[in-house]
Length: 434
Image (tube, rainbow, N blue to C red; front, side, top):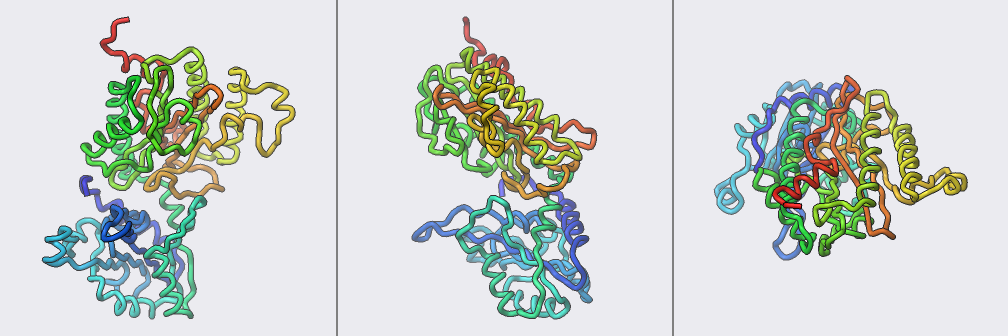
């Protein structure tokens, strides 16, 4: 891993928080992700399952964590199983964690090699009536590939049919939604790396640049700052491409007079950042581009004021919609007749602002969280309103990452990344004589 070691107190605390919500006479199991094949002998780069990482800090394949807080054997209340390293692995892949290193990373005292799993697991299951299984319960999940976790769940249900099955999702979603100070610092690091990438671009972009060249500049800056790269597939969309919400081809030419929508973010230590900025290709916004830009910025600034403890997300999105409606009227994009005739389930403003304003962020870009309860301090959200006008070849979205504070004013992890139109123009035109 490129990132610096993480204080293991984070993972110890996370396990304590999970165990507090477990029922009696139960254990919970968390598996690492597979290394996914491409074809021949090629594989995708390994990405650790976020739940086992959140609870242990282990960032390698073929790892299993078991939490069994009521085990009569104190050594089995937290158990980690790892792939045993050997000379062959050390030469061809690089050595895996040994037991001492694994304790230093995780704080888990009892560590076995993976070939001992079946024997130890049988002993542990004999002490409990129920098992917490970890399924992907994200609201936007659309998984067709069978994971290592899926295979484990199948085997448990077959081998232990008399045990009750419980869901770890409701617990992991709750505890992962509240960020600790260590997590906030890791997310800040990801945002700081993203900032360096944006500043690099503001001095690089000019007419005739291609979208993929911009992507390459960002990747260069991210990796040289200890990031694995992009936290999600980057969007570099110039002109009308910005009106495609999930545009990822990044193969267009950036032409004089266009605006580039950049939805990009670095990861750091598996934590995501998620930024959107809009940059004029020639360094100057037209009057109309600036007008739309400032409307989006206004809505964003007003929306983030609502990300305070006690807010319900449904109410939040409705209120943001009212801000956007007013701005679209000012821009001449909708009028009172459109509002009078609108479908209440799809308001008139949705023609130009069709997505949500905020989502949870953390270990995943679209992180897990509790959507139907009031917002709490420590939760992390994006704030990303946008206006998309295909007929004008213009799409503007602005996005920052925010931590909800007890004080009521959210902490903006991207607060020092240029966002005002004048600031962006000033940096792009440094040294230019007008």
